[in-house]
Image (cartoon, rainbow, N blue to C red; front, side, top):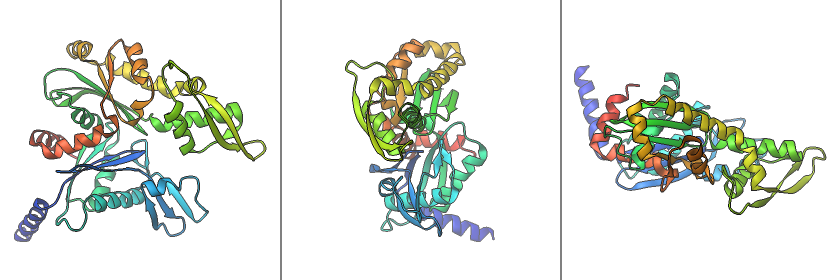
Length: 352
């Protein structure tokens, strides 16, 4: 039996040597895939369209997102990730399998090793669900890393140094806030508030103020085009189309950036409060470093206009949006794969 195990392990290692390893930012809204040696090769919505009766997958990613809110009764388009964790195990597995096969085509022999970024606040059961899904989807081995650590590595923060670095990664389902020193999070805070909560706030505002029902895609479009966390030099407006809740007929209105900003106050307050709590619990020596170094913002939702100004005003610290905040976590998983100093540290810390 020991000889068989040795042969099996050896075969796995040989196959692994010829495979291209993969880093995955498994986000609530978007999944990014980093292929070792090539960089980010996939950036697609975390959406799967399935047949309601059979559960058979019809489409994944961008094609499935186009179906959101527009499917007949026999088809349902769903987002299997909710608040950064798996809400539907089977569908997430199918989605992962699709992304792995697309990033790691059959012409490449072997099975890939995969680094997956996860929220810091998830439970052991949720960690196990992510790991099992990746293994069943075709991974040789799986290493889990906290999103805040991956984001900090991705934006180039000197996290291995004995000094404080603070990062706020605002994604679709979660906001990850961490103060990092010597390669680890000294204090981390994870709240299940992000871009999705902002979209829901916009939907709720239009429903209450105008009796207008809109879908997730329309809310996201409004947020991207005119949403803001801080007053704009020139306020914007946009025409919104939806269904009148009273008459049931199609209806369109025009909304302004001022009222959308007011609608976003609730989720923004939660992000600001979580940031303050993190700063209050940061050791004094590291807090002193933050005065000089400031706060770095990453994640797609950090692109909300004026969010850096709001956090700077509320914390008294300089805030900077990363050069490419959407790809920060995925780039971090790639650096973990390709740089031994990161991989060794993360592997030792990943005892899931």
